Image (tube, rainbow, N blue to C red):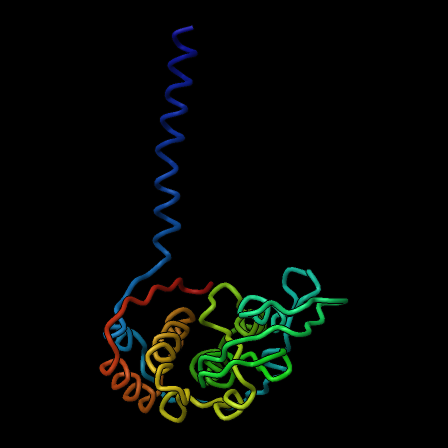
Length: 220
């Protein structure tokens, strides 16, 4: 009887000891860095767009959880200020959204684009060209981090196109520091490089913004 009780106690103790270790392993993938330090963490390298093709390199929107709503619809549903009506195979009607790039409220989903904060062409230029097709598709449809894909006015997204912050910034002054931090966060998450002009611009922008912590988890 004593041995049975002792064995049970030891088993419970061993179980309790493993829980913090597992939690620590999980937490160790979450990294914190200040905005002012973050730019220095990104390697500087020249960009090369040789071989880039949006469709063949990254594919289109996917439906990763097979619920009938593709990535575009998932972002719209997540970011809606007023929820749209969902019918049929995830057709959205009505609803409203706030496009923080240009401080604009949009009624209905048709006036919105889903922007990759770091565009697909920029991803290719700064490291994505060396990835597998599977990882590029995952990048193009990444819903784990809300900083990665955002619903914005079609006008602002098309003005941006595939430009980096040295070439384009959101027109709303209130968006500058958020966009700077989000751009850096995505690049850190995916271990992407920055080119010299991008480095200089991000350094200047970070210096002009209040310091803040950037928390990110390196993508697999």
